[in-house]
Image 1 (cartoon, rainbow, N blue to C red):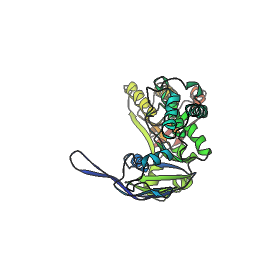
Image 2 (cartoon, one colour):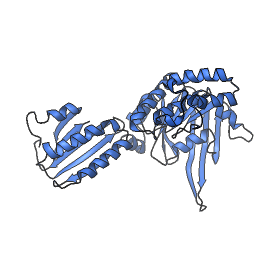
Image 3 (cartoon, rainbow, N blue to C red):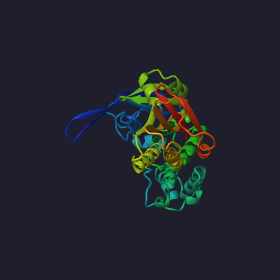
Image 4 (cartoon, helix red, strand yellow):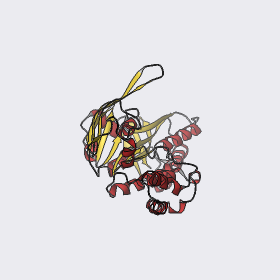
Length: 357
């Protein structure tokens, strides 16, 4: 369906210097595949996606779609974009149009679909994404998640052969991510060909037929989700998929910046889409530091998040002891009722209490 050969993209900065974002990208994409594109920031993922539909014209190489070289002189890009939809980070809806007008505009203008037929199909698509009741409102009245679902419906209205998703959840409040991913999961089940730039590792693992790991401007590794996430070939791939995000604090007295830590925790949870857990994290941290471990100083406090396993944990580590610093009996019952598990384990340097949120 799509063949990419030796694709490259170089940008020229205002001072005349050049930066090469895509170096030598090669891949074959078949109909019905769902491909998630993952990798560190700045490695060309979004540029690659935008190059596929010529929103970011490549510097070199070839892109073949349905047997035609779309980089050839004279190729009609409007023809390409009717078969290749795109869903952006920031929705890009027309604010002066209602939701249903946003969806019917392109089919009526580009495909010549009669207004009544276009509206009927638009309503069917809105029902598919759970927003039929919002057909006649303006985008300004919608939440971020609702806007992105409208953007997906708008793309589907052109009956594309493939849809490109450029980090479709990155601009959303954490509480709205799930509703968009749910729609995308259904599209994958329906057999739609999709290429998705995403930082949602569990989603990529669960929904994809293939994974592209991009690094240093190339597709560093290409394989099934099982291969990429469980048996990666390259050390860079392994380091990326197993990465753990963390915040670490040394608590050596009662005069620590509790409010500052709370603010850091809140920002951390927003960044990694953990908004649903922030209240429990804050409550457990406060009770542990000011009640259960109030006489234990110094200690190390750590908040960790592993994207692949979706594990969030609060660690309280105390050096130089061999037994649990927690009080015995029912004192911890309140915390245990709020969390998944409380793990007490010795370490080479002391003892750790790990609380899975």
